[in-house]
Amino acid sequence: MNSHNVYHDYASLDDFKVLKLRYERIALGNNGNQTQFSMYSLLPHDTYGLQDMVKKFNSDPKLLAPKSLNNHLRKVELSRVSIPKMKFSYGVDAKELLEDQGLTLPFSVNDADFSNMVNVNPVTNVYVNIMVHKSCIEVNEEGTEAAAATFVGFLCGGWTPNYKPPPLPTFVADHPFMFMFVEEFSNLIVFTGAILDPRK
Image (cartoon, rainbow, N blue to C red; front, side):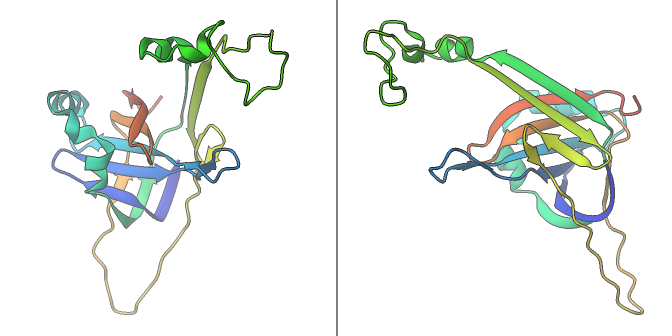
C-alpha cells in the first residue's frame, strides 16, 4: 500500500509511530448490531527497534491496549503512507477454545437446545459439532482488506498562496514493525503479527 497526502488516525509516540486503518463496518444479522475492525501498524522509530518495542509491551501490556493507543491517535494528513504487501491467514478450532473457556452447552449432544433456531423433529438432537474460525488480512497496492471488509483511502489536499506549511508526517514501514487486528467496539485484539523484512 503506497499512498500520498491521505488522512489517517496517526500518532508519533516516544519509541514508535502508530497508524490505524479502519475497515468498513459490518452488519451482524438484521438486528442492527454492527462490528468494526481496524488494523494498527506500530513502527519503531529505530530501524532495529522492534525487539525492544516488543519487550516494552511485554513488561507493560497496557501500552499495547487499543484503548490506550486510541487516546494518542489523531486524524492527520500524512504526506506518505507505505506498508509492504503482505497476506496472512489464520484458522483456529473455535469449538475447542470456547470449551476451554467453559462454554460447553451448544456442543453437548444431550443438552444443547436450538429449538428456537431450527425447526426439527423433537427426537433429533441439534448441537454444534464443529466450529472453525478463519481470518485473513491482505495489504497490497490498493489498500488493505480483511474478510469481507474493505478500507478505502481518500485523497485530500489544499493550497494557499505564499504559505509554506510544515512538512507532513510520514508512515513508511521500510524496517521491521508489528501490526494487530482489532475489533473496535470490544477493544478485542483478534490477532497480532510482525513483519521482520518488509522488502520481501
